[in-house]
Image (cartoon, rainbow, N blue to C red; front, side, top):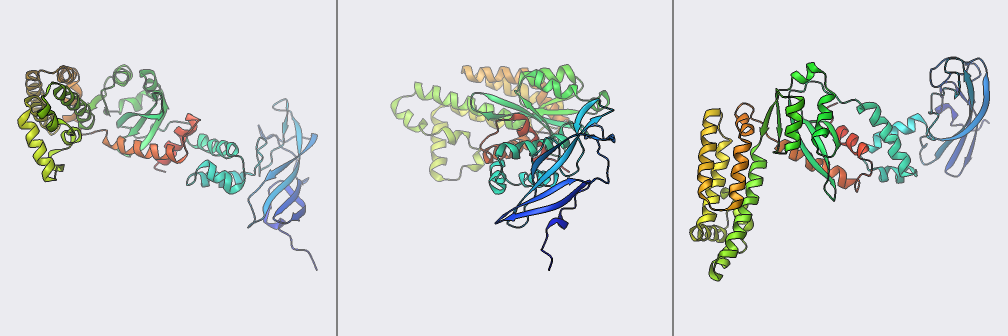
Length: 399
């Protein structure tokens, strides 16, 4: 009666299995090159006449049920007449630099789409660095070249990758939601590298780019893509003005009497909320008391409501009128923080007016940033920022 064999499930091309050892939940398959085929150089695939030397290596393969499979493979080194060097012969089921089979490497890559590197490493009992390097090699092969296809409208923002003001720049295809590019830091040179990778034809197809009022990004766009309209969105503008409101609140609290301080105290988030989101009677009452009590706080709250109205305009002339009106009203408020923000509005008014031509915003990027943070948190951070970038691009890929 013949012994049961698992070798028929391992019909590798150019390699012949000739034996097996099974001990408990481990199995070792013995393999050697199929002598019906002449050896090929793994670099240039040229056929070589004779082997230079023989080597052997243990290759981890896919598990068979609960049995861990390793292939002890003999292989040849050849003197390649084309490369004029000694190379390992081409063997289809593993790469010369790897200790795992190609199909196990593909399985690892597929698992890494759903699990963290540590989870995959524990599941397969491999070193986490091995898992990460395998996954990264597949990602580099697929996403090493930036895909500039069909880009017309972009959104640009930065994301903090770790403490200490360490940032990465994120470029998003506004229409498809695809993360096109990520790079270290948020300097003008960082974004310039993105534009430098584009052909002139693809660069001319860009029409608008949504971003916050970050001067290095503005400089990069004006230098590399001067025809593109820069659009500043409402989200960042209101976010910045909310900081102004809080500064004003603190200034007024310091100047207030003891009785007035009790009304101002604890009103930070009440002032930052939109009026329609204030539902509780005690909050409505406190807000009414505060606005009646303090003229300056009342004025900045009116300015906040009027600021939002600018982004409802579809006409540049109407938007320009509202911007000038807003700035004139803000000049009445005697507060250095309001004055500084007003000067900023005047300086960046071109980006606000461009919103009339392109009704775009970066709120879509804020949602993307939240997902990026989830990817980072799930892996407890990434030491390799290039790998992190590739994982993000993969997560938002439309393929």
